Image 1: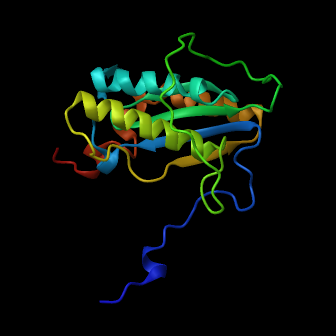
Image 2: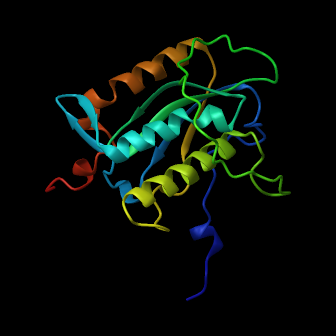
Length: 195
């Protein structure tokens, strides 16, 4: 059987021509591989993180320590995915958006990203998410004794937040996500009703 590049080509959902390293607010969703519920459970509309979920949350909160231009806004670790708002600031300018930032200063274990002609641009949204996925995978796999195993699905969902109204709506969506878990498209029990 011959390889069909049109059938297996992964189409990007990114905006064509948009510079994802420019200042702005971005809503991202990152799912575990096969949407495996690794991070805890939703109980009575509240997310209860297990140790891996707490590690995922800590790795998320550490993003600004690896990327000085990044500030984090609302985020939630769900059983099999993370929703969060990443704000990339301009060089030397403050964000006009009130944000939540961790005060902890963990040692950076980020891998340096070199500029490649066709690769990920350093300081971009993709570089930030790739770094988060790499660091969190190493830490969580070490904790569960599964070195080298994929933890996250390829890619991630992103949405450029264009105004304050969108920002408020996305913040509310993130905060209410546990209460809506029974209707969430990432909930495996909706895909496999017998579970």
